[in-house]
Image (cartoon, rainbow, N blue to C red; front, side, top):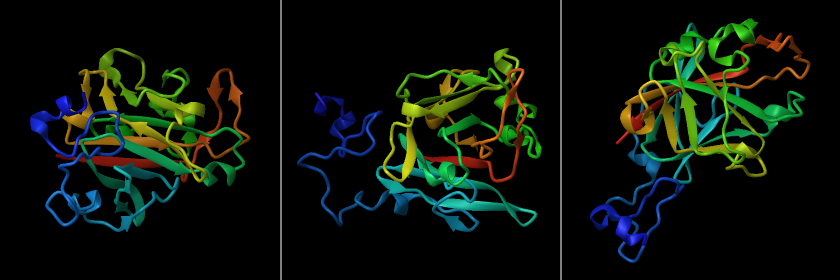
Length: 241
């Protein structure tokens, strides 16, 4: 059954939902073309090369390899990171220490994205969390108990009041180990044009928000906490064919 799904009997085999290639008898041997590590086949970008984002320690893992991140600075500060990514599923992971060091009892991260960098401009730092449209109460997208591999996005064009975010918590961290909380991403689904950005776009712009203030309270269904530097990352994925 697996063999029949290989386009043109192509090896190694890949199918959505797999985290790594599956090889059979005719797979290339080490040293032959096509056997170089994934990282070596990716383009590089200007900027300091990192293995984790500076504030949340976030990593992108694909085919078992941690992908390089390239820091982009503005006014002497890292404003975003660029990550070259193959058009395949990948894992986003964060160190468990990012929560424990802040005294947070519940491990949660919120993720919003668009196919353009206006999502970065909407992030309101040093202001109430509710000032950022895609973090307002009621903008979270529901998912299955153990996650679906799909992250959702919609902008104002969809007709809703606000852009949305994805709320990753509990068993939705479905690719974790002792040191990390991680979740697999197979699709970045844009509800506005019903497309998967992993397949259809040159880039995707993601914001990761992690509340590090354990004293934050909900007042009248609105979070009175401030969105502080060090609680978010701006990540630009550049898709590679």
